[in-house]
Amino acid sequence: VRATGREYVVWDEYSKWAEGVGIFESGELYKATSFLNSIGCLVSFKKRLNCDVIFLDPNCLVSLVENIADIGPDLNPAGFIPQRNLSLVCKSFPEGLHRDIIQLLIYFRIFIPLPNQPALLSLATLPRISPRAEITKLFPTKLRENDACFGRVFKFQQLPLGLVDRVIAS
Image (cartoon, rainbow, N blue to C red; front, side):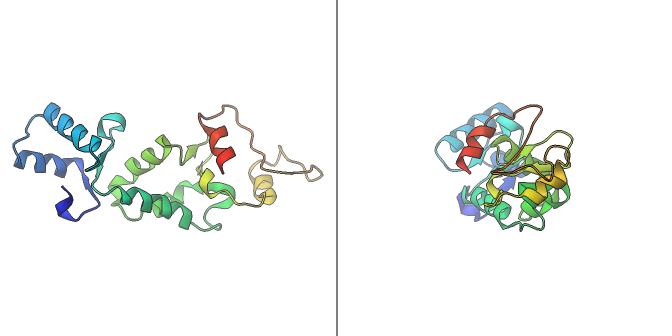
């Protein structure tokens, strides 16, 4: 698998590789994939997330997170990554795989979808300084001009799982 020199492969091509070594049934392919995943030869989320990307090099996932950090403050105001800029995160993958990659980032809570917002919250890219002006634009009724702001103010109708841990860690 690693001899290919590739960072990832899509499930259909991976299945053809398996057929080439005598694995024709999907159940057997899942077992073989689970074994290779458990010994660190590849990283697969096919069974858990129905993600069609098989990562042959785990460092590929690290570079994916680096792509998030590379998005500048102009494209990432106050930790929010607009839907139109998500392709920049997945720039090293074909466009057909972007949905799977974004689902993976949401699953690991690197991105947090917000209700009624055309953007994803990326806690890893929140600015160090309190973004008062950006918050005022996003939540104008929540923070008035005369209010003091000594940190980040976010109000959610529903608290996403793991959010408090991520905020404390950031």
